[in-house]
Amino acid sequence: MKKISTTIFESLFKEHYSSLCYFANRFVNATEIAEDIVEEAFIKLWNTSLNSTDNTSVKNWLYKTVRNTSLDHLRREKTKAERKSGFEYVHHTGTETFPLLDMIRAEVLQELDKALQMLPAGCRKVFDMYYFEGKDIQRIAVELNISVNTVKSHKARGLYILRSKLSPLLLLLIL
Picture 1 (cartoon, one colour):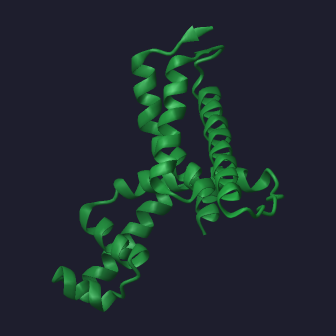
Picture 2 (picture 1 turned 120 degrees about the vertical axis):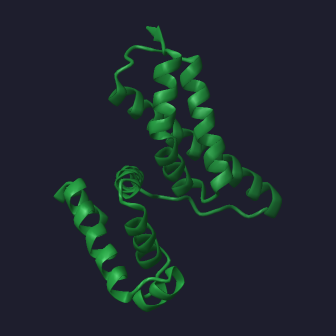
């Protein structure tokens, strides 16, 4: 059993923090609480001696810890609510497939975010405004003070770059 090094710890934190926060938020539906849960998981990682410091096994350990801590949080909140209201909640009878899908979704979104960061600034801005803010091409052209054809070419170039950076399977998962 070995203690994890500071360098490896920092690397793991930078690589997995955002996807773990997304994963935790799918359980608790509160960004601040999700961030606290993920930070708690990293504190546990720092204080724990692991059998392996392999990136995959540590990542799996982190996801499992975040899931369990999130479920513990939900149980505590449920108990508080039951005491406060005097009524019992109906037990959630979900299966393990939902957390697995959320974990996959978090990883896919992380890969998409990495690919988006590699787009040229103009393409990224048009891509964000069109796909994430839901603005139409005309409005984007007016707001950015560029022609409609420039907006279209930025959008097309962004899609081309993303297709080349992301695997076909990842693109299918995103869609």
